[in-house]
Amino acid sequence: RWANDAGVELEAAPITPAQVAEIQALVDGGTINDRLARQVFDGVLAGEGATAVVLGHESGQDACDWAFYVPDLVEAGNLVLAVDLNTVGDRRLDLDVAAAVAEVRARGAQRVVAVGASMGGTAAVAAAGAPGSGIDAVASLSAPGSFLGADALAAAPAVTVPAVFVAAEDDGDAAEDARAMADAATASPSAEVIVVPGAHHGTRMLPGTAEESAEVRGAIDALIASVQDGG
Image 1: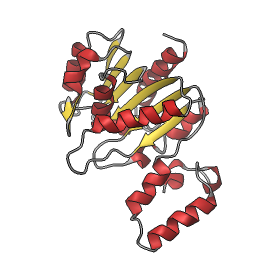
Image 2: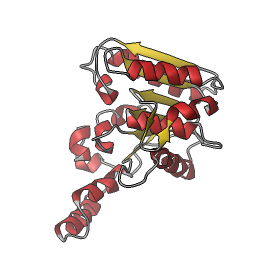
Image 3: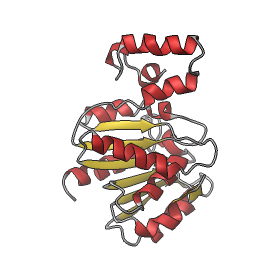
Image 4: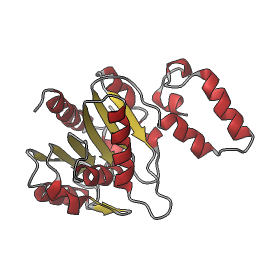
């Protein structure tokens, strides 16, 4: 599915055809289910570079929701990890983001930018506010102030890295939440709020067909560039 969503041939995906066959055999034999099989793909790093981008998805989606965007980030010279956030049981989503950051750091990333959509944005901001987070910049798209144990609004005052909070003006409380988190991020050297026209939510602001796509993508690109430049 990842390869289909990303629009790439299986041979270009970050997993070999032989590994795909092994995973499919496990699914066919009932050893693992389809969701666990997808997590094998989604947990695999794409691209390479000294800067890593960790992507957190919105509620009701999984890491495949970022598939259309991952190739662009890879082409720009980034290491990318789109994670499946675990919403089952008593979970704190920010800990999933923290684990992803630790993974890319362990694989050699010198800089890490966390980007999240909706609940993924909440998790990213909350993770960025933790001591020694390993996150160098953070961007949230349509993130609520808190979700499933991750409290971005409470963590915002402890965010000491550049941050961008993006929302569509007609997307419920998203713009209000974005402004509240940015206002609370008093220790950040740059806490920018971007409110775009329309009602698109999360990753729906990124495809080229969205009027706000250029502005939102540009903000994320600028955030990544500022980290790469040491800004």
